[in-house]
Amino acid sequence: MALRLLHLISVRLVGWLVLLGRSSAAEDVELLVLRHEVAVLRLANLRPRPDWANRALLAALVRRLPGCCADTDW
Image (cartoon, rainbow, N blue to C red):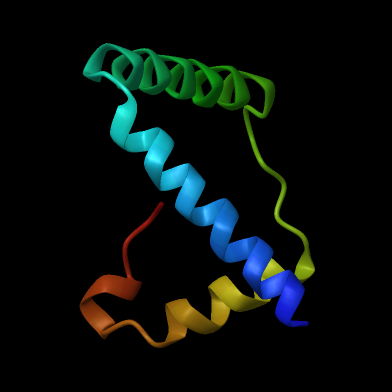
């Protein structure tokens, strides 16, 4: 247990040291790559299909809305 904790702490510290040494250009490139990945994932899943649990949760949350907000048509 202690060895695992020590490993996790050291990995986190090394990660922080790597972040300190990076240039802003590298950060900009990383942001562009992540934005591109998000755009590709959005195209791959055009319309998500909620399962019964998601629909039940949304229905319960909608019932908690004030009356003026619950009457809107989506």
